[in-house]
Amino acid sequence: MAESGSLPAGFGELEVLAVGTVLLVEALAGLSLNSLTILSFCKTPELRTPSHLLVLSLAVADSGLSLNALVAATSSLLRRWPYGSEGCQAHGFQGFVTALASICSSAAIAWGRYHHYCTRSRLAWNTAVFLVFFVWLSSAFWAALPLLGWGHYDYEPLGTCCTLDYSKGDRNFTSFLLTMAFFNLLLPLLITLTSYRLMEQKLGKTGQLQVNTTLPARTLLLCWGPYAVLYLYATVADATSISPKLRMVPALVAKTVPTINAVNYALGSEMLHRGIWQCLSPQKSERDRAQ
Image (cartoon, rainbow, N blue to C red; front, side, top):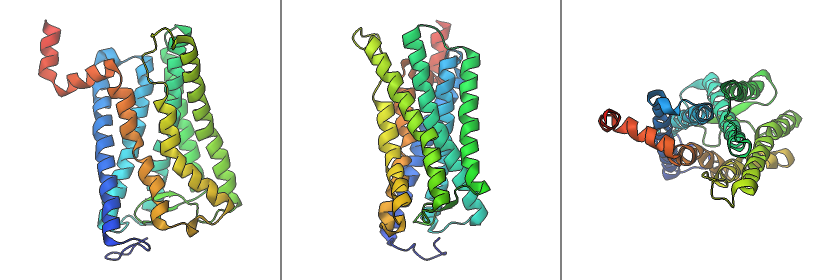
């Protein structure tokens, strides 16, 4: 962790400023778009459906991920972590919970869409509520384990944000990482790929499929893949031998997830887009309903 007034090891003044600026832009973009999505659910009765509840869960998770980025951006611009070791643990836990909830919510949406398009039956409220409850309970469970000793949270190379510590690469880290990655990355990715592949096989040729079937899986792979590669490398070699600047890249790439998801699931949905537009122009919305 950088001391007040000093630069983190391996970083120059402009590099610290650049990282803080990128994190700030990512945080504000993700917060703005996902807050609009959440607000549209609150103000638009037509959006209060079981399938849209899954999208709401994703928007809440991505908003939390953007808040995590905002704290990291503020600390980076200050060039120090002002919240102490307990604050680091809380920041790591909050970031891990929302990251896992975002990944698993994307998989839940994929399954929900498969259920809608391929079984031609509406998603029941009790099923949607159970999925949301399970996603958040599971995410909190896995994120709490490092606080209890299986895994550990520590500072990123810049010293101004916290994540799962990969510096030791010991048996404790390796066993936690492999188990967690199977249930919270590989399994959600498999569900996402399988759901959209089955949807394409059944409805792709009919033109009735109105969702992007490739972007969700690509987002999971491209945005969380760098972290996965870094963590896997840490299980077989000393990850701290990699340049600190290069080790910051996964964190910066992962923070783009909230914006990409908002564009895909909210702005990419005609109904959600209409709900967001109504929130932005309430006077027009009231006039349209009166007519």
